[in-house]
Length: 311
Figure 1 (cartoon, helix red, strand yellow):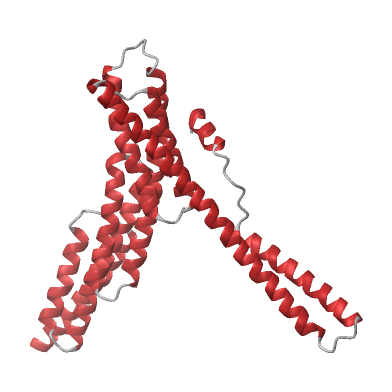
Figure 2 (tube, helix red, strand yellow):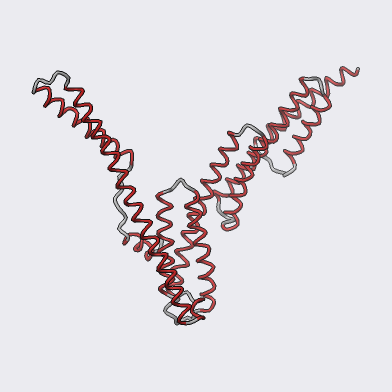
């Protein structure tokens, strides 16, 4: 990221976060040490069941550690939200002042407003990174970046080459573009993975296809902005194959049931529908070739058996 936004993010004084796993391992170690210390003291004083008292004391230490971490986390989160709201208020106030002083200035992205918006984007991006697995947080960032980039583009069309706003606007465009790309790709990855897993887990074929189609729609949204992104192209291909495999597997299963019941005509019709669907996109993949070979063999087998019965 550009240096200007890196400095803004660092200047916020991000608190030191000890990973939860490390924190709880450390807490358990401290509780265990406390247990043995208390047990040793009580044992030396002749306590009949020192391990009971020591165990209770160790549990209390663990409980305090959990409560303490939760309290610190909530306090830090509340401070983050408070700072964010303060920044939003500053942006709103700056816009109001611009409208009062000069109606034309309301459409002007001043250095002050530009800087405030970029700070807000940086804060949203930091929050999204903390809540890394939540796609909605990433979506909020790239949508905010898209709005800023549209405003920035309009300003750059009219800004004077000698204007002091030019350099901040160019830096802002570069920073917002980087944020937009990173968070849109992260959003698409999380959403597509979640919907893909849903497509595997659903029982009804229609629900599975719907979930996979939604995943394709998510990837297409990102591809509209980044059509050359290799990861998106590969994800879309995989999701498309997932839809094909779900539908073809359903046709094959229904055809097998029909053949088992002796309804050869229906079985052949279903198998041919599956073959047509496999070939309609003119795509050649290992799955499609193997599925087509299996279906064609089943068709030949059914037609041969039907011919024998007719003879």
